[in-house]
Length: 375
Image (cartoon, rainbow, N blue to C red; front, side, top):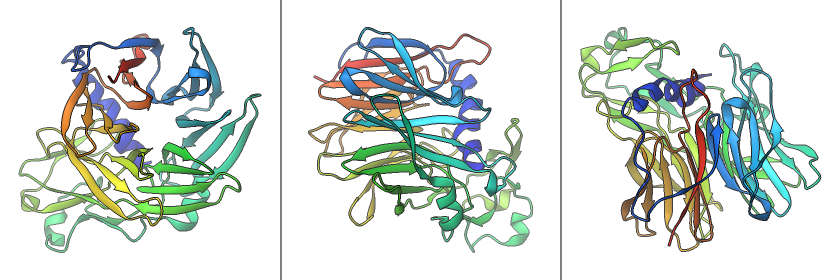
C-alpha cells in the first residue's frame, strides 16, 4: 500500500497541478511526433510487440492493449477486479510477457498479489512467477534503513507525521512495475521491494539481483509533506531542518543496454520540485553480479527508460514534461517536450512513448501513444 501511495496516489494528486500549466509543445530537437493511438486510460507503459505492433498498458484500467500497424487496437489481457493493475510488458519471438498486481489493502501483506505472466501466439496465458510470495518470504530491502539517522533525537521526531515514518526498515510490499527480457531471463523492477529481480522464464524461479540504495535528501525548514491519500499535509517540525532523510528508491523501469548492463530509473519518495528538488535518478546495474552504480540524477519523475543500440539513453520525465536524451557519455539534452510522458521504448531508429498519461478522471480518456524519429 505504501508504494501505491508514493507512486500512484501522489502522481494522481499532482496531475491536476501539472494540468493547470497546460500541455507542453509537441516540437523538440528532432521535430514533431506522430500519434499512433489516443483515448487511452493511464497509459503508463509502452513496448514494441510482434509484427511492428506496439503494446501499451492502461495500468489503472487493467488492460494490456496492442496497437496494430493499421491503427486498430486489441486488448490482449484484462484484469477487471477493482485495484488490479496491468503494468510493463516485453515481447520475445511470439511470446509477450507482462505484469499484473494488486496492493496490500490496509497494510496486510497477505493481501499482496503480483505476477509475471505470458501470452503465446494463440492467446494462451500462463503464470510464470509469483512476486508477492517471494516478497513475503524474502523482503529484499528488509535490512535497509529509511528515514532519519541517529543524528535526529526521539524528542524532535515526536512531531514528525506517521507517514512517511521517521525511521524504519524496508516493509513487506511488492509492486512489480516494469520488465525487460533477454534470452531466458526477465529482469523486473519492483517498486514495492525497491529491488531489481531476475526471473528464470523456464521454471519461474526468482532471485534478487540488486536492492537499490536509499535516496537521501536534506530536509528544509517549513517543508510540507503529504500524510495520506486524501490530500492531507503537515509542516515538519523545525528541529529536523538540515538533517537528511533517506527516502526509498522506488525503481520504475528497467532497460538492457547494448553491453548487457541494466539501466534502472528511480523515483524516490517524498515531494519533488521546489521543496526538495529534482531527485529522480538512473542506476546502472550489472546483471551478472548485481553491482549498482548511480549513472545520472537530478531528473524530475523518471518513470520510463530505453537504450538504443549505440548506447544513447532516453528517459520519460513524467512531471518534467519532457523526454530526455543522454548520450552514452552521459551528456544530457531535451529530445521532446510533451505533456506527462510516462514511458519510452526504442526499436531501430524509432522512439515510442506514452504521453498525456494522467488525465482528469471527469473528462474522456486522453492518453496517447506516439512515435518519433531518432535520426
